[in-house]
Length: 179
Image (cartoon, rainbow, N blue to C red; front, side, top):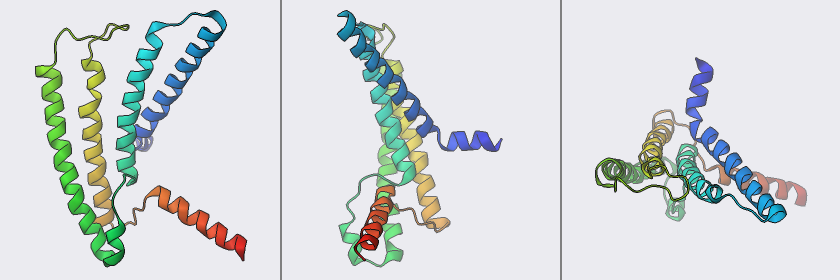
């Protein structure tokens, strides 16, 4: 059961890795076939585009899990450290409201307003299968935002941007090298 919890907690990462591997392999196959045989599969490019779109949205959810979304943080240098996590949580509240409204509108569009005959050009399936990523990814993103804020505010964890942590490590190595 513990392994299943780990998979669920990292579902966006596994989905992104799988999608990336598949669409890169498909595009590589397309390049090889075009170059060597002057032939192309019409469906590969379309499927790769759809997979890339899914990759982007699940990647955004994964970034929310890591607390790595872009923010304007310059003003935080003038504030006490204890207040920053509450101000960020307040900003995340607006993000949550946006996500909930977006999920509602996306579901309404997919199931009620979308053209019932709109299908993929070369693959032939209904485009609702492509658009369904919107409510799924934004729902996951909402859960991840709540998780990050719980970890920061309730558990008191330091949820720093992974890029900032890497930058701090590079700065430390540079300083050590200079000395």
